[in-house]
Image (cartoon, rainbow, N blue to C red; front, side, top):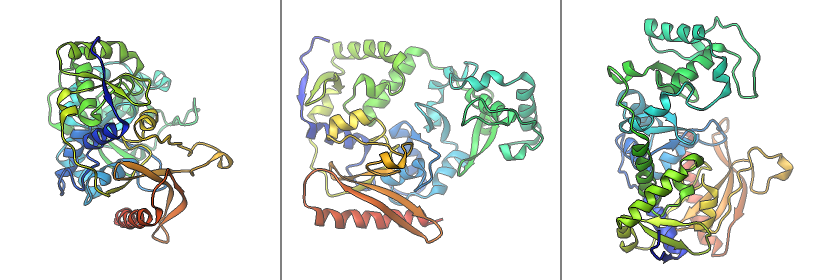
Length: 381
């Protein structure tokens, strides 16, 4: 990669990332049910998380980009239209069904590479749950009440052998999550759910590497090896070779991001694109939002180092249990520790922390308006 890197200011880098994330306009994917699969397709994945202090991450990530988003839109995409499915990226996520072939190779491994608890799944456990689903149709773990409970092997493990078997069959692609209510998953045979004879043919490793690079370029704009291969370090060598090949073909150009020691790249046409200043749009960002989850990248681009403190003892928290960065225009201007009081039907601001400098009165008014909108979304059921 001998080409001299193009110098890129943090302001331009932020602007390009916001454009790629579609956070620089109010309703980039339109409205109605069709906006949800469009957003998932553009982002590549939407992370699922169990924490429910405010809205669950997948719903909030979609709401952030689709102002009229409704939870039933995601249910329709997953269960009726079947345009998205659940599987593992760097975490459990919603993924476009059209991309399943890029995950089919991982499904061929015995456990998806996820958990040592799967080694404890017996052939009998697996046959039991699969036979029941084949005969009786989709089921949840609550439908199985005849398990002989076993000891946990770690804190988050299940004592139900059937749950381990369901999870193993899910990672192997035999089962898919056909429906989700909160965190309760309904499992169905993957082929029956999608109406297929067999799973899509698995993409080759080189095709998957190309897919991950293209996904990152689409959703991140300016990329680094860390950002492309988030929590997938073994793939970095192959990704570096692919990036080098694209640089030689002039499909990518090296970028020197001010203040960052990491190498970055972007498509040449992206760097030449004319971008207007971002309006005073306010986004309250879930800690698992794609703009926040890679915290080193967030610090490089925005000069803000986010702390996720949910797993810290209370006395060590600075920002709060479930603190959420507030994006106003192209700046992180505040961090809010939020909690939804569902009994009183209120969104509570536990702590408000200002970031950086700037006029606070006008910013506070804009943020409070966004909080009222977010409260209405959360409490609408």
